[in-house]
Length: 165
Image (tube, rainbow, N blue to C red; front, side, top):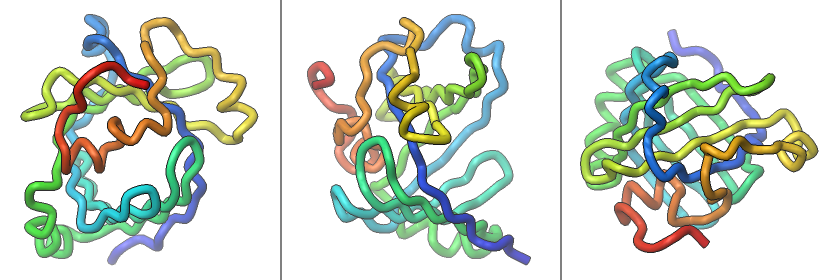
């Protein structure tokens, strides 16, 4: 039986790393396959995700640092029925969880056509906590709100060219 949907506001900042940190494999990690069923740029995304043994349907609304997020756990048959609809709109990555102060930094190392892209995300409990975050130097350039580094954009357009804005 599927679990009930979860409802949340996601408050998150994103960073583009220049390379994969040599020490990253010391941290817990999981493989993620993510595909998009629908994308209305700047408004809504509907995605499927397989993260380890879990399969989830997620709807996100909004852009930038704060977005509404709804998640529904799917069983394997439901996921399998929908997954083919995401063809040509997918990303594959390995996510590592790096403890930092009282937070967890999720570092995504992309694979396949996106190999070489390393993006870190930090989620916060409040906008004030997000604004007060003093990022460690290894995180690199902040790309929060830069649509070129949104997963859905990477899935449909591939790797962006040039430096982050």
